[in-house]
Structure formats: structure tokens, C-alpha cells
Image 1 (spheres, rainbow, N blue to C red):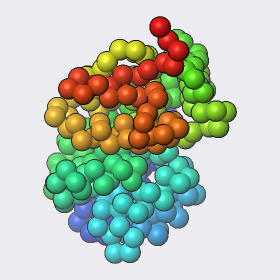
Image 2: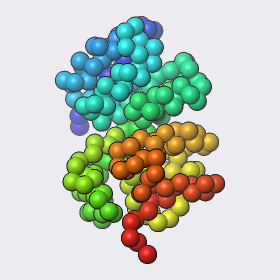
Image 3: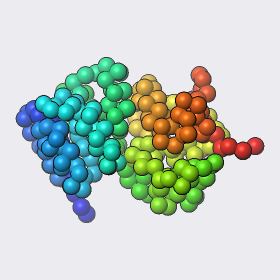
Image 4: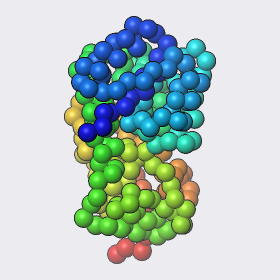
Length: 233
């Protein structure tokens, strides 16, 4: 079985050493980069399962690196941050990150977050019973993990894809934030509604004609989110 390949991007040697020690101890293969430009070069040519990306880097910051990675890859990204404010977390999620870990972190916390993100990536590759879902000009081909809008393929990250799957499988039903947080991120994310809001925002930008007036993913104030099928009774 192939090893999980992780790119760790951090300019602090003590954190690079800690990450390598933790990940190699559970059998992961670790590549490293000490700056944003090197990280982009590695991400562009190496097959990766996950990127651990520090926000504060000597050249490009982690937000910019994540945005550029998203231009060519859907590899899961976990931001490493010493900033614990929601606004900083939202910036990372808006740049395309799947999750975040606040420094300093424990080995158990880091590995738990990584396992959750890797499970989502595995979920995105798993076949489902219903092969195709269609609504308006949106098509989700579960067997090929392809999402198209008006015939144009949209590249979704594993986290975005899982959110879309949850919404479409329960189309026309309101899903409360607590349910979606648990299904997508797992335990320990209670109350992290800003993560869900940002993920909804990212997904709308990819599949809605007008994200400001969404046709598919609609908000029910005080309740949650619902996937509306145009023309459904």
C-alpha cells in the first residue's frame, strides 16, 4: 500500500522537525519546503495526498500559496497558524484551505485533523449508489466524481465535493449546521459555523450562476441550508 505523501511548508526548523517526527512515526512520507515559491514548485510536480501550510512564510504568505495551489490542484490543504481569530481562519478557508491547526499543536491533534481531511479525500473517490444527480444545468456524476455546470467541469476540493454530496443527497430538505459540520469535519467542530459558511460561499462561487442570489444552495435563516431542485414540486 502506497504511503501517504505530505508536503510540510514552514520556515521554522523546530516545527518542520516536529512534523517530520510525528508523521514519519505513523508511516507517512514527508516532503518539506521553507518558503512559498518552493512549496508551489513541489506541489506542481509531486503527487501529494495533503499539504500542511504555514501562514507566515518569508516570501509569499500561506494564503497566497493556497490560492495559487488551487489554480492547478484540489489536494487537501491544512493551514498551520498561530493566529486563532475567526477572521484569520476565514481568510485561509476563503483561499481554498480545508481545515486549520493552531500552533502550538499536539501530535494527537495534528494527526486527527489530517486523518479527517484524508477521509474526505477518500470519500470523494468512493462510488455511490446513485450514479448521477441532475438539477437544472448542474450534473454530479458520482461514479466519476465529476461536477459540471452547463457542460463545463468544475474542479472541487474533497471538502467542497463532500458538502455538495450531502446537500444533493438530501435535496429539498433543510440541513442544520450542526449536522453538516459533523458529517464533513467530524467531531470537535461544534459551533465552528464560520467554517461551514465559508465552504458554502466557495461552493456557490463554483456552481451558481449568481452566488449572491443562489438558485441551488439556499439559506433558511435560523434553520440551515437546503439544496433546491429547480422545477421540483
